[in-house]
Every structure is written in C-alpha cells, then in structure tokens.
Image (cartoon, rainbow, N blue to C red; front, side, top):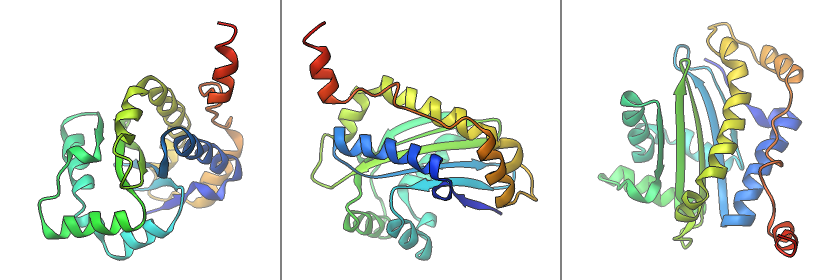
Length: 204
C-alpha cells in the first residue's frame, strides 16, 4: 500500500498551499488537508498544510475512533458525495472526545469536510480553523460556488493518477514521472482577493 505525500512535488505543493493560504486569509483557516485514495488497493495521494497533527493522528491510531472519519465513511457507503461541518457531528465516546481535544491543542477545530467517490477513488478536502472561529464553516458554505470550483480543480488533477493508484505495484517514481507530464492545477482564475475586489467595485 502506497501513501504518497504531494508536498514532494514543488508545483503541486504550491497549488495546495495556495488553497490553504486562501483559507487563512479569507476565512481564518489554520489547517488544510487533501487525500485521493483508491478503494481497490488503498494506495493514496495526500497533502497537509503541516505535518505535526498528522503524525500524532497516525501514531495514536486515532483513525479507529475518530468520529469525523467514521461519519464520513458511513455516509460514503450510501452516497457518492458528502459535505459536512464538523460541528454537526458530535462526539459520543471518551476516545472521540479525547481526539477532538488533541485536535484543538493543534489549533484545528470547527472545520468543513468534503468528499467525492467516483471511479473507485475517494477524493477528500478538509479545511479547518482555530476553536474560537465559530463562523468558519458557515462562511465557507456561503462561498460554496467557489469551493465547488476549487474541488473541481482538485478532482480533475487527482483523477489523472487513478490508473496508477489502482495497481497493487504502484511506485512513487511512477507517480512522480506522471506528475511532470500533467498540466499543473491552478485556482488563481477563481480567486479575487479583497484588494482587487475593492478596486473593481469602483468601476462596476
């Protein structure tokens, strides 16, 4: 089973960083993560804005009890798409509450998760913020059209790797070679920062 960190590809890392930086600047985000996983082999691509939480999550095997992960899995068994604010999913066990507490210690809370299942691959994006930012997911949902456009760029890029990820013999070098042949994803055409918007408003 291959787990490949897209941070290793500078142009792709820059693309995901631009999404994270947009979340930080416009909505007060603190953490962003992405994954694209074959449901046939469990080979996956992933990206995170910082690695310390991921390390804690894996080392403590939080995936077994995480209420957000469990909810997402159950939904994806019945549907091909989901989008949910973390605040809508309550912890039910002590283990789940401990995971949420550990997540907040890393300044990660009140996020929004989106996932899509197609062609035997799940593509997921999560954006989150600090515990005091109560309007974060609400603000994101008010900008759903933009989020859908960003998700489209993510999905369009990630699906290029499906054939490789479905192979049990998938290797990092194969993914790296393919990545250099692909046009690099870009969200700049969808995003106008507040300064540019204020300038445009003078003329329109």
